[in-house]
Image 1: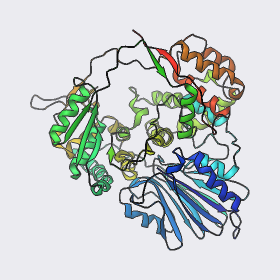
Image 2: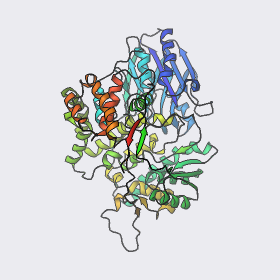
Image 3: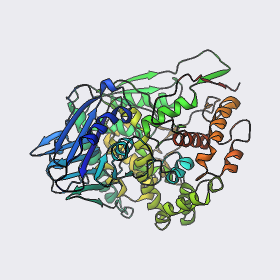
Image 4: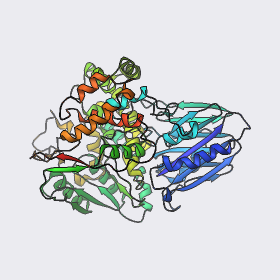
Amino acid sequence: MRVYLGLAAKRPGAGIPEAILNTVRAAIDTAFPVPPEVIRPREWHRPGIAMFAWTNEPDDSRLPPLLATGHDRVTGVNGNLAVPGEVDRLASAPELSAETVGGCFSVFRATRTELSAATAIHRVCPVYHAETSDMYVIGSRALLVSLAAFGERIEWDVLALQTMIRQGYFLSDETPYRGVSALPPSSTVTVRGGRRTVTETPLPTAAPAPATRKQRKILVRGLADALLATVEPLRETGEPVNLALTGGRDSRLAAAVLHAAGIPLRATTNGLGDHPDVIIAGRIARALGIEHTVIPPARAERKDELLVEHPLARTYETLRTCEGMTSAYESIVGYLPYNARPTMSGQSGEVLRAGSFLLLQNDLSAKALRRRVDATFLRDPALFTDEANEHARELARPWQARDGLEALDQMYVSYRIGRWQAGSRAGSLRRGDPIWPFLDNRVVRAALGLDQAWRLSEEVIYELTTAFAPSLRGIPIEGKPWRFTAGRRYYPWQRRPGFLTAPKTGGGWSWRTSPGETLTAVLRDHVLDHLDLLAPIADPGEVRRLFAEPVLKKPAQAWHLYTVATMLSGAYPGKAPEGLDPVHVPIPS
């Protein structure tokens, strides 16, 4: 994991006070969610401009380097580049932009006269910025930007937190920290001559659906070339890529991309031997001639209850890792020492299928799509105050005015990837830097340029997979059939793509969704004890009604409220809570 922070004085010729520099140096232990002893720092200073960089990588072997130095300038890349040497192009460009560079990254640059940073098309490697009376602050961690700009006393943007309670992540460029904003997708923030400018490149507009087989092949080929380019850095790792493989759509495409690129890989699947995920993953591995390891779940003795971490401890760690931009309802990957071994999964493959918002839709009429936009921004309006609902309507208006397919497609990239994943993946990034082929800057740009209904049909991802690895054509998928096969006529000599569905069992119980009375009481007491802090955005009577039953009926929303209440109470940032006993949750018989 890498962390960056840049400072630029507003008044030309003014220096950055040493007290501010020392504040930044001291703040990193709070803002970087790893043990302080594994953090390695770098600094670069010129009159009125400073760039800080930190990493928990154990050495300087990873490319590009933490800070790439050039003639009176320095450049840092948060994430990975498809071609590490392209850091030189980012460093020397007259105006910084990430638009045409491959990889999953953001970039930070300082020269004698300028401080700038840029996001890729999905901003999953985020950039945050703030302004004070004397300087501009730009960084990769929102809390660090707030501490550098405004000092130790955190001022929360309470109104912005209404979307955290609705969805568990942000549907805007807001952050929990007043005065700190997230840079939009495909944007550049530049400080030059004492002035800050933000330049945005609009997300691509999708072309009409291809009318002929030839047109479809050309468009798929363009996306295929972008996918092949993004895995090139793995050729230099010297060991096989460990791929988390299932029977689904996205991880098999990842396997096919690596296979077509000639990059050695091995596959790992979690599950029992008779589960379709394991069966199909085994067939994929045999078809590609790769090693396949199955990891069965640990078989514990039968118990009638589960001990779970106290919600306050869980929430503190989530806030510390994700900076208040992910709910503690989510399970965040815990800390382990950094490991440079190459890993990959099918995560975020939904972008090639028009995104999760559209994948939830069966009805693609304009009215139904508008309802989905409204429900995303204005979920459970009765729970919120008039001011919070009006703020949500303001955020929704630009998307309500757009074509529904395009709106939901780009909302997925801007918010589901650019805010939810940007926060939640921070846990795993502490352990290493996996390659994310479906989040490559050029891959996402190419995908957004394809007709949403065509991508939603799943024909695009099917054609990509079978083009990369023809041997996978006859292997079924786990779950539901390929969408494009619905209603399509197949002649006797044609093979309809198959699928396997796991039998329904009683194994779907989760303590998060079925919390039981004891855990419900712990969540209830904490939230109701802090109703005064939530009152500007959440209606106290409706919050009490949410917790009125002995067992929660809406546990996700309860966790969202608990997360925000913990934040506003001042429990974070600060010392981790101690002496909290685990909570007993009964397991249904």
